[in-house]
Amino acid sequence: QIYAQGDTGLFSFSPGQTHGDSVTQTEGPVTLSEEESLIINCTYSTTGSPTLFWYVQYPGEGPQLLLKAFRDQEKTSHKGFEATLQSKSTSFHLKKASVQASDSAVYYCAMS
Image (cartoon, rainbow, N blue to C red):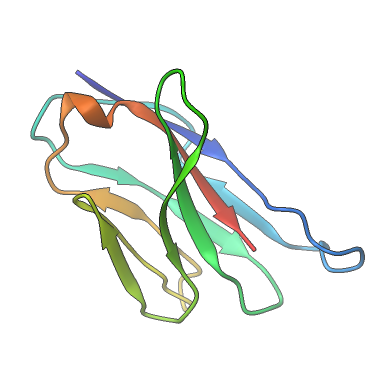
């Protein structure tokens, strides 16, 4: 089984820039069998032009950058994971077509 734990991450902003800025993602664990597809939703709210990130934290390790995007419609991918920054729907959903046991981790969506 694959465990993809969703959590919310928000990078710090300079004073006066945090009002209304947030990211929200799929809550709680997502349990999948190997070779099933994964999606962890991430939506954001901001008054500026954000950069969006996905971080992955494997058991016993610190978080590491998985994906990032800063342009509308920018599609980014790494190790079979992909996400597209959609300004219209204010989303940056993490997807993988076929998960493996090694994908078991905590996944964080973050914004700067």
